Length: 262
Image 1 (cartoon, one colour):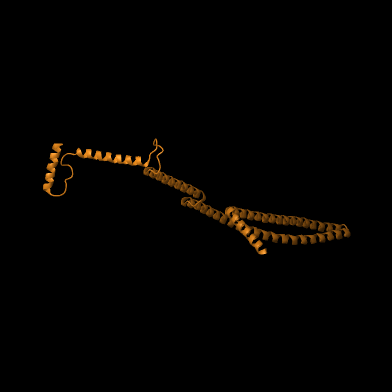
Image 2 (cartoon, rainbow, N blue to C red):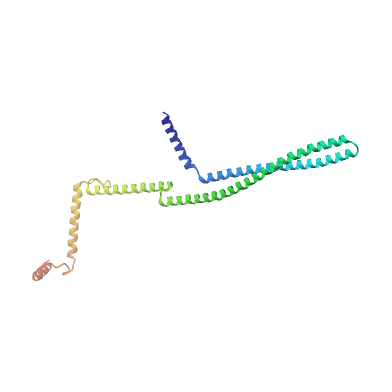
């Protein structure tokens, strides 16, 4: 049971793959892949901008703390000048805390600088790959479009295309029907000529005896007309009989006598 289920599942996957392959346009797939790469590049650039912004913010905070350090040192000197050692000690304590904060911010700034450099390099590499993919994509699309056009032209010329195949089948059917109709018409003409079928256009109908009598009468008419045409030929223009020349002359004289007698 499990084996049958696996085979059925494999069959459905095969059919689905075939349907997907027929419906899939590689140009659309390439455009989609290119769009995905552009979005990835955009994300890297946004990350780079965020890191650069954080680095710049820490840099500004560091500058502010440095200014505060200088101010606290000046306050400590002023406090000592007026005999306020306690205030001087407080100012120096704050200055020490501020210096520690500056050192921590510098470490963060260094780390962010390194991350920014890594993202910059990654962005440049990804940009180069995207540009190369775009060039290759357009080349493949152009090649596919040209091959598709060539295939359609070849199919149209050879008649193997789906549309031209339908036209070819229609022409073949029309030709077959025409030949069948011609054969039927010829067969009917033969049947009518032999008398197997009656000519419905003739009044009263016709049978085979009548047809034969008409043929004999037509033959007699031909013989009569042929004899009349021979009689109208001038003397000596007809063919001479073969044999003895004297007999031929006698025959000619007899013929002349017969013509005179007639």
